[in-house]
Image 1 (tube, rainbow over the protein chains, first blue to last red):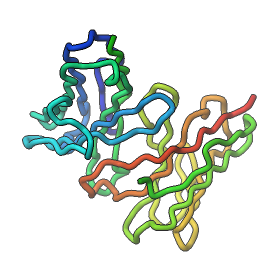
Image 2: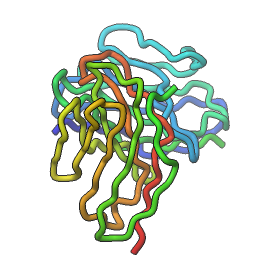
Image 3: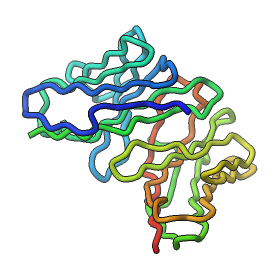
Length: 116
Length: 112
């Protein structure tokens, strides 16, 4: 089945630095990928939608200059958290839209970001 | 806001069937019902989806009422590894450009 690989699985960074998270579709081409954020004991919240070759669209309240998304190929989308602060500490999960007619969406294993 | 309503938590004895209900009274005619689960600190895992008919796969069965306003996910023989948060979501079958809207889900705890 469609598999999405997310890397790294966890990262610790200092305040003010930037962190890049990668999301790769391993056995299919993902025209559209999605990035979610999940705080402890809460549900997943959609942050942005990433389309190959075009600018990402961000959900209301998500700072596009802070969360940079690049989807330069059909198999890779990246999320860069710029100038990270402790409040950015969260579980970040990517997802890819599988082809129409199938079950729809497949998810990466998530990245635990801790900003100290 | 999520378009589904689920109980926040449920317990089930190991080896018994776990029946997880979901209300989606505002579902539109071409929206599917999806079920995903999330084991602690992992990404969501697809379980099953359906439109109108009941569905069964190797993981679970999905029973959708005739008016499509509610559904039940059935794990026929629950094991301890089925302890997770289960999300019922309505959406389009991969044809929409939108991501999924997750509600709070049901925390299913399988008791030994």
